[in-house]
Structure formats: C-alpha cells, structure tokens
Length: 126
Image (cartoon, rainbow, N blue to C red; front, side, top):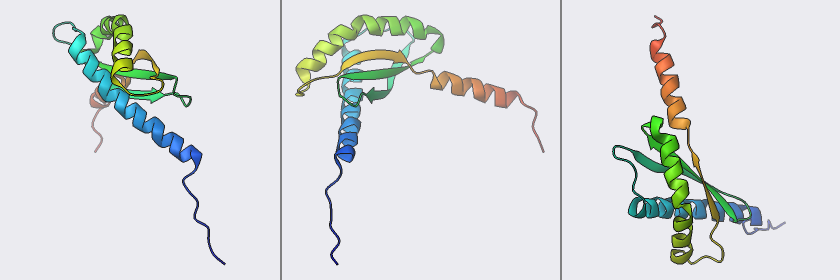
C-alpha cells in the first residue's frame, strides 16, 4: 500500500504568509518611523511585535518605549504619524492590500522590570 504525500495544508500556507507579512511590516514600519518621525530627546521606541489579522486587512503594531514613563507621549506621536506611515507603506510595498495599522504599547518590558524588582527585593533563601 502506497502512502500519499500531500501538499502543505492551506492553513499552514496561510499561517506562513501571516508570519512573513508580519516580519516585513515590522521592519518597514520601524524604518518609516525612524526616517520620518521625530521622537522626544532621550526616548527610544522600537517595534516589538506585529500581529496581522487572518484576513490580512488589519495589523496591530506593538511598540516598546524607553523610558516607559514617556510611553503615552510617544504613542500619541506615533498615532499622529500613522496615516503618513500607512501612505508610505502603500507606496513602498507591492501588495494587493497593505493592512491598516493600529499602534499599541507593549507593556511586557515594563512588567518584566517590575517582576525583576520584586524578585530582587525578596530575601535570599539558602
């Protein structure tokens, strides 16, 4: 009895495309922001992750901001630049449809810092 070999499932191909598009968007959005948006002095903002919806219509771009105390200010600046970034992406990328972006704040680094501080404050157990 012969075993049949099947092509990758449509679901697998779709997931791979989502991952590839998220990676491309992460690099391009970061590049567009670094070239076209002036952030306050002493602030660093990086794209920490991009999540693309299964229908490829929307993408959430999460930002890490240092110092975290200025994150709301930076997110406001990024949201003001969102339309210009969207237009730039539409012109640069050769896609049928470039996802519409929403910018969010990635609070994972801040939470990790708080957890680390808590762990450091615990008495050492021998």
